[in-house]
Image 1 (spheres, rainbow, N blue to C red):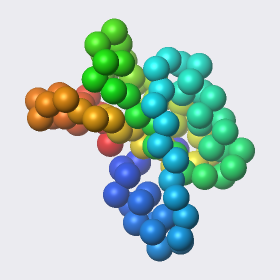
Image 2: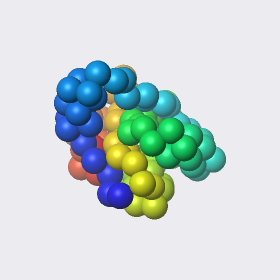
Image 3: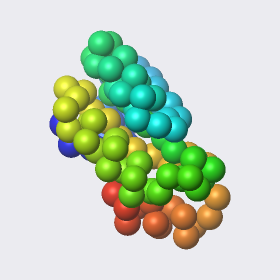
Length: 99
């Protein structure tokens, strides 16, 4: 399944009366583990990176990694910039494909 936006994911959760987990991921193993756990629970999931995380890995690198794993997943996955430190960083994340 391709990456999705959090808007519909959270509207569905509100309507269904459930929460959506959001987890900071810093490497491929964490991305794979969080998605595998979400699939086991058949639960949508939000994967997040922080400004400090993207200092040693680029926005595009994390977007490509999460998008590739989300494509194989049978559950909705979105990619969020957690605690973006500036408007400019948020814009760059959107341009890189963060949802």
